[in-house]
Image 1 (cartoon, helix red, strand yellow):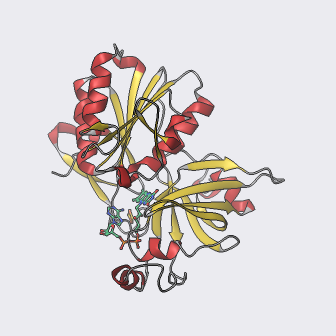
Image 2 (tube, rainbow, N blue to C red):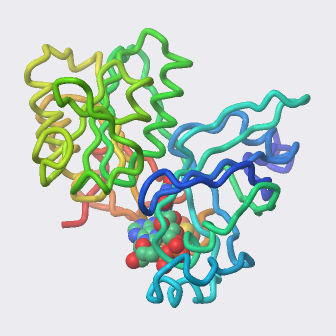
Image 3 (cartoon, helix red, strand yellow):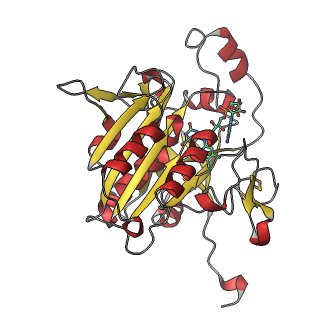
Length: 315
Ligand SMILES: Cc1cc2nc3c(=O)[nH]c(=O)nc-3n(C[C@H](O)[C@H](O)[C@H](O)COP(=O)(O)OP(=O)(O)OC[C@H]3O[C@@H](n4cnc5c(N)ncnc54)[C@H](O)[C@@H]3O)c2cc1C
Ligand code: FES
């Protein structure tokens, strides 16, 4: 097939806001329904892929709704689209069915502050689906998902994807954060005091929580929790795979953990992104190349999901 005949695998679409609700503290959940053309492109979106949203024309949150420093931050001009992965992708019952995507977002700066003003029936411009998502190598029967802080959205999508497409796969989830308030989902406390992450509990066979300060779940690093679980269970290396998303030091620790247990591991990396489509070169990730050399690959185009063995994590 000539290149000119190849169907583009991404585009610029309109998405209508269905809901935009508070999850907890600074975390919100935005549900969007893609237009008919966008739905065709997003139907097979993989967990870990993302979209660039244009939030530049949105208004400011109302006076009184946010503190002055945040209001000053929100007032900054927004030049660039912003990347967001999806915590859920599903078909709505319309005819033909529309694709709905859920974005779990943390309110940090001008774009995400303005995102809080979106209300049902508002329309947002979305470019996507972008990047390469998580993949499931043949023969895997156990998936260990490790989420750090705001790293949970693409892993929530992955857990749902594995449930639907690999019903025999065992899914074990570890979610970590500095403190209870830093989880972008509700953490339920069961009888006996065990804490489970609400969003993952229905998707994983087992789900564990760890916090640095012990305010929820095990006290300590989520990677130590996963390490202990792997040490206790006789995991066959060829059966299992580790998937992770979170801050880079955590991803580096997950990569070491996977290496220690001889497991395949895929990590979703984050970089500041300007274009999201491989043009501006702003999102370089240093990776290992042949003969002990390194090369820069693009987080937006070659990632954001990389084989952990390939990444030279920042110190
Ligand atoms: C592939 C990908 C998927 C993402 N998925 C999600 C998601 O599901 N939910 C979510 O809340 N956020 C996600 N993000 C991060 C999100 O894009 C930023 O939080 C958002 O751009 C912040 O925009 P802002 O204008 O509100 O704040 P800004 O002023 O742009 O940023 C606020 C602060 O966050 C830091 N920051 C912003 N973007 C990044 C980044 N990409 N990497 C490291 N630090 C950054 C800035 O340095 C600054 O300190 C994702 C990023 C990438 C690259
Ligand atoms: S964001 Fe422009 S090349 Fe990756």
